[in-house]
Length: 602
Image 1 (tube, helix red, strand yellow):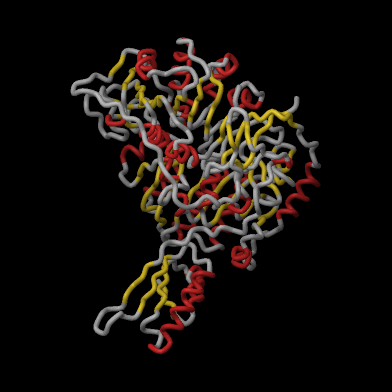
Image 2 (cartoon, rainbow, N blue to C red):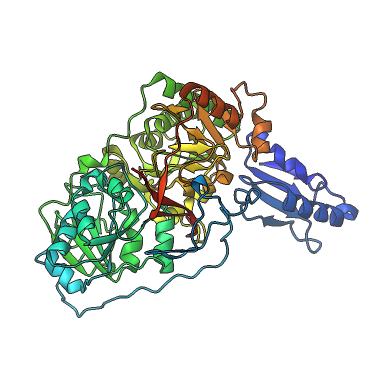
């Protein structure tokens, strides 16, 4: 902690340069009695003007009465500053967002990343109580669907913790189809290539709408792009989904929770059993707010299951099936450090930038994705931390083996886990109490009293496209075909003090930097840096970062320069043309509509 004289409160900005995160502004010992009122006023004005985000600020006041000790006032943390509001987001390619979208409803347009802060209301949930001794274990999925009272037009939900190994979603949706039900809204937290059997159900009208916050490129995403859903898909973020559930915007009639370990009363966990997949954090809101909750398991254990992650007080029925999925599908081919020398160079540049910006420090907080380049950044940051004896407060997000290794080496005090990306992470979640579950709401819901992403120092993210205003697209390719959903992208970008995009400037034959992205996922006001093999572009909004890096020796260029380099190397492609048909609605994490996805012309 450094101490700052109350007559010079702006000196608190020296703290990061000295590797400190705690500041004491002294209005007692270093300020004479006759000057204290003026120093108090000066301090208040300075704190209202200066950006002290990332610092823990305490004010030491003179005693109220003689003989009493000085009074300490701890200021609440300052969030990442809301940068100048650029006004309502311009949708991709300049097309307007309608005020009303058929199959979606009234649109509240995006008005800025921090425009919807303040008080919010949570909805009530329906609870069906039963008599003592009531049996919850049912004979089949069909019986569970009948008992739940599922009807045409209702909403069912699934979690994606089994990722590309999931079998429950396909099993349940086929049972629903076999019962003749139609017009079902499928609210899955994620969909993967293994969910190809859903496509015929979309074509036949069994499934007419999909809400999702994680996609892998594959058959379901292509089918949505081709207009095979009767209603637009709703593409949310990891934090936006629980916000929608808790607010009542997304009402789930029946939640089907794949449970790797479960007892006959519905106590369940995701960390044990032959299909263990890690914590089931994306299912927590569903379990709490759905009208009916059905646990689907392939590992029925004697009562009580241990540990209990979701309790019997939230579960209505239990169904045992042969297999809920293949845990080997969790890895999905993503959690390996890149061996490509160009990508490794990008990763080293990103790690050096993080260091030069002053974020590799005691108590740092950090998140990366599970892509090869992001993991290489984590490996490089790990080396900096080891060399300097730095211990971070936590790593967060989807947890992979590299963060597990850093926890075991004492480089993090804890891990906050919303999903496990590999088998090492699953084992760690089961064995290490420092490896803690966090709900998707705790992770990224902006309408809570504090989510974890708002405590991030640094996040490393990727991009399918980024434009010269730093808007990022991770949802569609340049051809307009859906590749994914936001996941935690715009949640983390909004919350972190330093948001770094790492990517090759050229992917295939296309330049990643565009004049306008095809689809806006994450607004440029929350993106700080783009790191490529041809240079590093800092968002001009971050004048403080430009100042900190001016003597770093890093190859700093403007994003317009990167755009020009890309155009010289790859040329300027013919823009994809789109029909008027809206096949996807992109919600920002606060529930406003930041863009739409239209069906590409053939």
